[in-house]
Amino acid sequence: MLILIAGLVLFLGVHSLQVVPGLRTGLRSALGEAPYKLIYTALSLIGFGLLIYGKIIAHPPVAIWAPPEWTRHVAFLIVPLALILLVSAYAPGHIRRVVRHPMLASVILWSGAHLLANGELSAMLLFGGFFIWSTITFISACLRETPPPVVKGWGGELTAIILGALLALIIMNVHMYLFGVAIIG
Image (cartoon, rainbow, N blue to C red; front, side, top):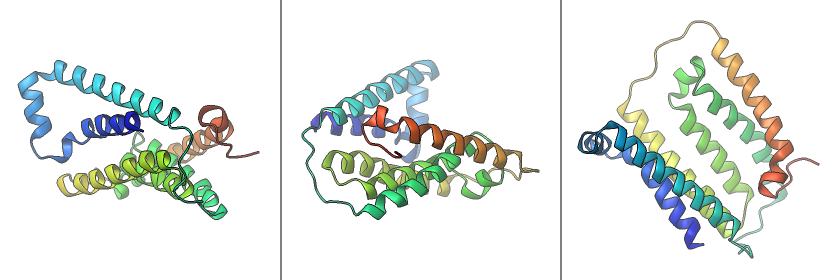
């Protein structure tokens, strides 16, 4: 469990630099752009690796609560919306303008849905950590940044919906092989 926690602290800590005003800018100017990016990437990858390894070795699972069956159905509905938001972060459009930070909103929905549907301690730490981090970061980003410009047309939304739904279908079919939990079938 300590490896999972270390991964969370490292990965989410590095990704929280922008929440503290001036910290990221100060580090970039002190280290230089290229070294900053290299260190940021290395620490992120190490943290991500520790997250994965920590979650894998968190056995036997310690059950905190037994989620009701309906929580899996809620997650089944929310995660595709999260994936559409994730894609809309890269497809300029009205979704991005309204939500402002669709990738963070996506992580909030994804982690919240998984937190609701999982009762194991390791899952609660993993998804709870991401939920708290993404909520704080989303609020912070909305307070310090202006909304993106208005976009004409609906191509960004169409792209986000089609690719997000396609990604959701793929993940539903491989979730068992990747994470050991069957979503369908």
